[in-house]
Structure formats: structure tokens, C-alpha cells
Length: 270
Image 1: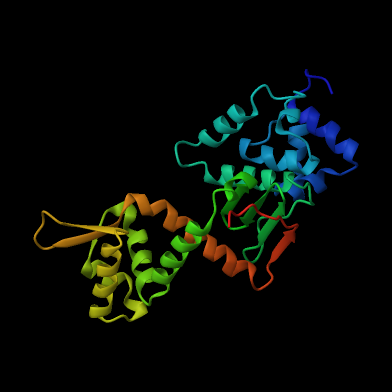
Image 2: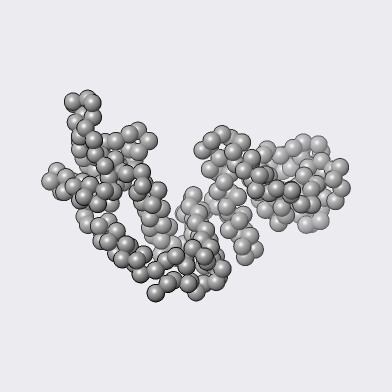
């Protein structure tokens, strides 16, 4: 394929080689057949469609631009994800992770727009990749398991025992909802958990236990009407998000709304 071809001409050649119609490609990437025709006659696809087009033809993105190899694919991905602005490229990043996930085993690409969230799981002895169609991705190399041992079991038992106590996880949910907007006082937490119907005494008990474990911190607001405030400690924030998202992924996959490929024997140190 010539390096002098436009991206539209390359798409045309790829489509003919695949034996597909403009309508086939259009349906696969969720555009009109007229849009595909426009590309093939000198137009250029929108940037956000490039990964989907590459996926349809099962080729690297670079090949759409007439390059047989990428001199720095990591930089290319970085620039593509960062282009919408800091923390604005999550959709692009997730679509790339979808490609990475499927690329580990090259299964048939699954559509992300399921009626219900759909869990995908690929694994072998080298590691595993788990993703859920509505926005969750988790890739773990085999080497990561080598650091897991009986101390991990002890830590997990203590953590999960605490999270299992009535009210604890709900209080954390209320504080996670507030993180961007700063700490919350007792009345804010109580209002957020109105549907949970916990007594004031129970909510305070949960806050005291989380403070004891240093999972949350407290301070007195300079505004007297706000009083004492609570927030999740920064050292715990990311880990708690990971635990909660993993629990949601498991909740989605248990009814059978999932695709499972392979198992790995993990080097857990016992």
C-alpha cells in the first residue's frame, strides 16, 4: 500500500480487499454510507472514528495513514488520548483499552454498546484483562501476583470485614460522591443517605470506625454553621475506588452477562 495515498483512498483499498460494502463499514463504525463515500472521495474521517475503523479492518491505526510501523506507538496513543484536554479523553482511552483487551487473544470484537453492561475476561498464565462495556478496564500482569501473599490475605480480611459492617460502605459512597466538592459534614452525609434509612447513631458509629482506621480524616470548618467535616484520606481514595469498581464488575458478570476466555495459574506466595 502506497504511502502517498490519502486515508480515504486507503480505506477504499482496505474495504475492497475485505470484500465489504460502504454500508457494511458504515454500520460497523456507526456512520452513514454517505460519510464513507465522502472519505473515499477525498474526505477524512473524524479523529474519534479512527480506532473503530482500524478495528473493523483488524489493522494498526498507523496503517490507515500509510505507515507500516509506528516509530513510537506509545507517544501516538498519548497524543490521541490527550488531544481533547486533560482528563477529557476517557472515551478515547477506553476504546483503546477495548482494542488492547481484544488484541491479547484476537477474539471477535465485541460491541461496547450492549443493552446491559457486558463483562469481558481474557486470561492465561501471563496475566489477565478484564473490562466491562460501560466503562471499566483492569489489566494485571503475572508479575503482580508474585507480590500477593498471606499478608495480603490478612489485610483483605480486615478490610472486607470492616466494609461488610452495615453502614460503612454507604458512608464511603456518600463521601466519594463529595470528593470533588470537598469534605462533608454529618448533615450532608445524612442527606445523601436518606434512602438508606440509617439512624443518626449508626451513621456516627460508622464515621468513628472509619476515623479509627484512618480511612477518613476530619477537620473543623472555619464556618461555624458547617462544623466538623469528613473526607476520605488520600492514601485510601484510589484503592477504595478500585475495590468498589471491581465489586461492581463482579456483580455484573455473575448473572452470566459476560464473555470468559482462559484461566491462569497465579504465583501467589503461600
